[in-house]
Length: 264
Image 1 (spheres, rainbow, N blue to C red):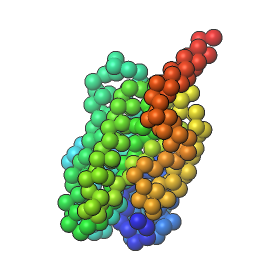
Image 2: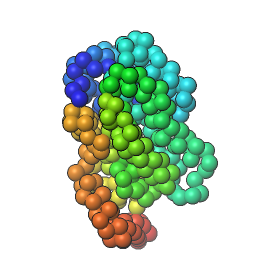
Image 3: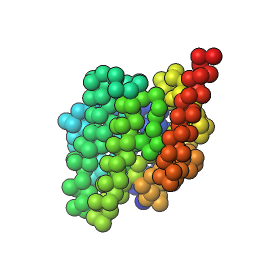
Image 4: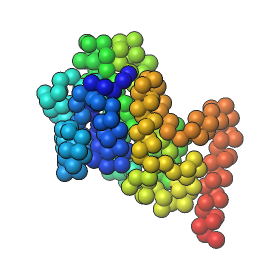
């Protein structure tokens, strides 16, 4: 799908990957751009820059997601491409993370995608065309060793995109899932404080949000399910599938070496 003359909505659009997506999409001459974020002033700044519409959004609340879609549709007509990009890091560590951290991450990292799909699919199916895109993470294909909450919710986001792609492709609805590894954003800075997590994240090198945006535009053009801005992720995923025990040993070694270096 080409982006020219399309109505595109991006959540989490005020900063990081979302802001880079908005700026990159603007180069493709879309019909309309909608920037949704919980930080309304930030959303307004980038919307003014590209001539788009800013909408305040709580991605963890179904009524807010529905209101965003209703407002975008009222302003610009049917949504062609919806990028559910808002996300939260969740609690660090393992099962000891609080129930509140689990609840927030589940609502924002998973259910926001479900709610958007629930609202948009009937109209997209009726006209035989539409594009749903979830931002997950390489953690959803591999793992994020510093955060069980983040890993589990991002795996769920990938699984959701895969199911949707299988179920709705013949009805004209395209689905992609963005799975970057280390990207220089504020969320990355949180994970970099944990040595093992930092080692895993930087294994494929750090890239800029703009690099992700370029990969997303190309992925949309070829209607690719998994958009992998880091080339090494495909190799790691292949190893995980073909020889999971070898992959696990490698991940354990990364964790062990990083924590040994910290304590030395």
